[in-house]
Amino acid sequence: MIGRSDVLAASERLVGRVRRTPVLQTTVITDRGDDVPVALKLEYLQAGGSFKIRGSLNALLAAATPPERVVIASGGNAGIAAAIASRQQQIPCVVVVPTTAPHAKVQALQGLGAEVVLHGDRYADAFQRATDIATEQGALQLHAYDLPDVVAGAGVIGLEIAEQIPACTSILVAVGGGGLVAGIAAATGDGVKIVGVEPTGIPTLHAALAAGTPVDVNVNSIAADALGASRLGTIAMDVVQRRGVESVLVDDAAIVAARRQLWERYRIVVELAGATALAAIICGAYVPAPDEHPVVVLCGANTDPAAL
Image (cartoon, rainbow, N blue to C red; front, side, top):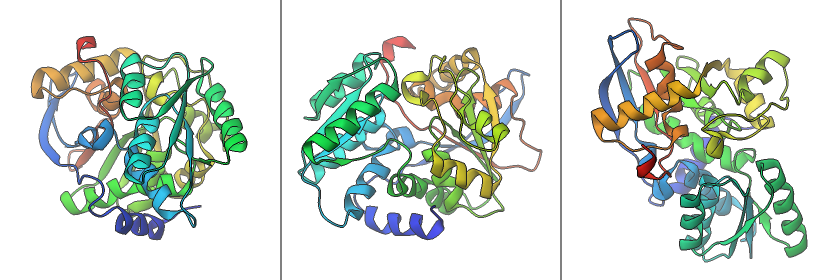
């Protein structure tokens, strides 16, 4: 459904419009007590506090006709990104969020001038309401993770990593609906291993790979506000199967511990989803080979620092 050429086109559209986020070369302490070299892609420093702005803005710029109104369903980050992208293009934006969305993210949306609609207690409920609004108002409906231009925009991160860390041999990415992991997998060559990391309580990728097709899963994790999709996207399924993306699961305790280590060692504040990929290395769910050069994407930081 998308390939490297789509990501390259997105990269050209986004030049000068999004931040080229930096990389931190460091080590992390695993639960075994050893230090593991890693490179951290600091995508939480992106405009809006997550990688999502890349996809939303690319979708607006790629539209054949500039939309008069935008609507999106989101647990928070995709909505914030859509609101920023819409404001840049001077387009009104409606964001439908579940009633369980964190207050910090709802406040951020309102501060960006988006019209916030609270509906249902799951992403699926919010998505259905957003679809209805798109029909009623003739709005362009963006998707948090399952729209080709959104996935291609996210994939620009993979191009940046290849330029910033030529020695990279693996990239670990948190998975919710799969847009980020699919974009990065589409952007990179077969010589780079892509590892999708997700909470044990929301195994969308893991379950899809086992079944050979996206399937519904229960959503039960502390990272559900950002990784709470109940089903892997169809675009992600296509890309992960073609690229042989691996799946790793981590429990909530490991996610909390990874976020705490980021704060205590580096004074990096991320949301729980932002620490999920790193948790795999720290807890030992993923052990890099001795000659491996892993890159971990810290994908978002829309959280209340008081929760650390």
